[in-house]
Image (cartoon, rainbow, N blue to C red):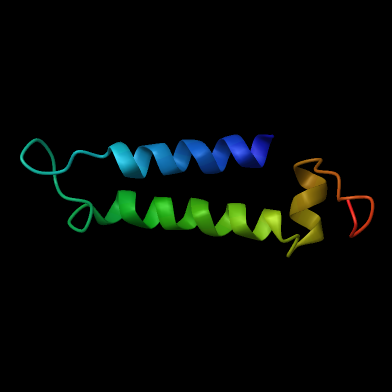
Length: 68
């Protein structure tokens, strides 16, 4: 649930970002753009279990078997 909520919240921020005329567009706001890409990359790595150290640090439990 943690990863799902994190992915969903990041998606909501990207979709609801208004951009022009009130703020910078997403292409101009490089800090936000890079942070969103970083968050999606980390969430993707957690979903596909790329690094076991990160999974143990966040206390995530792997699926019991492939059929699950």
